[in-house]
Image (tube, rainbow, N blue to C red; front, top):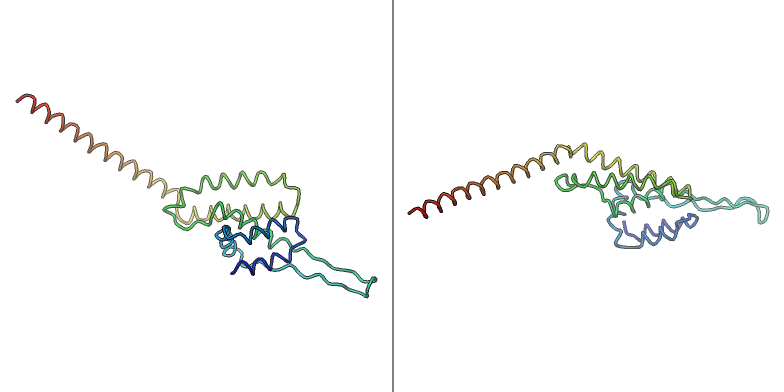
Length: 182
């Protein structure tokens, strides 16, 4: 999806307190990976419902909407995904899960200070979805076992290097002693 389509959708949400911030985020090409992650996770956000007027002239009433839930969570998830992208490769990504979960839980603990209830709900939902994604990836890819195996393999590799170096040293010393006795 082109960012222009997303910008058009965002333009229908002028009612949101973080509208300008959101509009700038979606227009910035450096956020493309986070936006793509949100598109994969939630699909394309829906545009806000249009306002309409009932009645005649001054005797009518305007009905304005601000359906922030869908776009709000999409936006917050995209922002999180810029820093903490969707995981894809167990060999590389498993190691990042513990620190990512720590970061997400730290952000989650600060949501209580957010004054705008809509932003707070959207951010909390996005964080919980991101945590669930990371935990699912961790479980499905047996990351704990993979990290333990990688650690064991590294330890064994290091022991092997030390053993070869130690043997070379022993043979070197024995060779030097033998030559010096001649």
